[in-house]
Length: 105
Image (cartoon, rainbow, N blue to C red; front, side, top):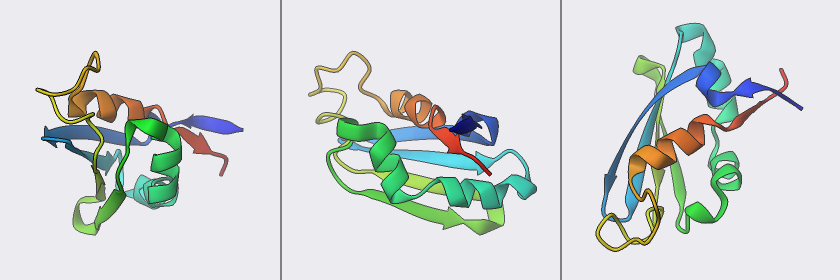
């Protein structure tokens, strides 16, 4: 059972270069950073995004900012100039990740 979505506890910003996307996630408060760390793992991100990410998922901690940098490899179907996806940029991946259901406390 879910108690909300990632968007309830974090802000996000994304970027893309070729077939790699990065999503920066920042806890909405310092107190929510521990929850963000618990929710965002390589496994959960991969499960949530499914076949959209064909490469590895790396999660890098930025403790001083209460933030994470999530790097999604082979995630943009070849990149903006090669993809046949409707929205092939990192912004779409950012919004998809913010829909990740939170687990119960």
